[in-house]
Image: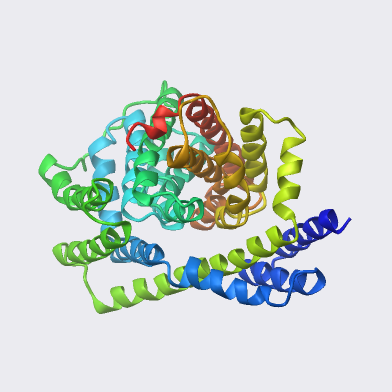
Length: 435
């Protein structure tokens, strides 16, 4: 009885406390401590938790890349360098309604590859692109969806904090995770672009007198593209580890602020302060999740989850479908980080033992699975009621867009993400082709 009751009680208590608004890291760690005491796990299990925290989090050199990439993105945001590049791309591509929409996607990709911070990307696009999209004739729903979805690309396109954490949880090489995410990221952008072109049919051509010259576009976009190429190229080519490349990216961001005359010690201080806050939140969650997953397995939770999944069938694609549907539904109420840290240690061993008949095994199988999870988790930023990108957009636009308009606008983009997810399952080469 306890083998079923304790895992369910632990999961229910944890989810309930999170939904009530308690801090997630504290909930995860506190739930782990409580269930050590009320289960038959020995008190010495606390020593095991301390050892796992030290090995998995505190001494994990890979995780140094997280604050460095966050700092790189914040320097570009706080200094205004990212905004300058956004304006240049819009001026270069905004000659028609379709071009204006595609420019938002292009800038979303650039912001994703240079910062990886969803909140910054969505807010910047909302402030700078939303008025021009409405001026070009796009309806409010399409505008809201395009801005939100473009900004959310920051969580998938490398260098992505999500991919670093997924690689760590799945014990797969992060450079391979980065390489595997490039194809899906570009496919997602391509699908979005076709939708934008379709939605822009019949809209009049835009005539503006502030088009940028090719030289000005090169000056505004060239350094940012060079920084992205240097960081990603060094990781994927094996020249530098993700940790080393993250240091290169942070240093390159500082050089860009010097190049554009945007450097100041106040700017660096503000970026550093925000980096410390964000990194502390992430690492505290990782510590809590490490405790939770260890105790959840100790009380039989992994066996219960596996039994529940197999109740729907033991075929590999049936199991994968149950896992993906579970992650998608949890995305309505939980953040991607919570889902990753809690569920990946449980789902990864189940999936790694399956044969999908697609020739994938070992690390290649887990990388394929990890990217599928990443694309799936990207929808959690867009799904109400707790989609963070929706909150970012709402805060940035004020009363210019209503909540129903925002929710209605993101619905087609959620459907497009699920379409891409299905294509990635059917054609794994879209992920593994660059590994």
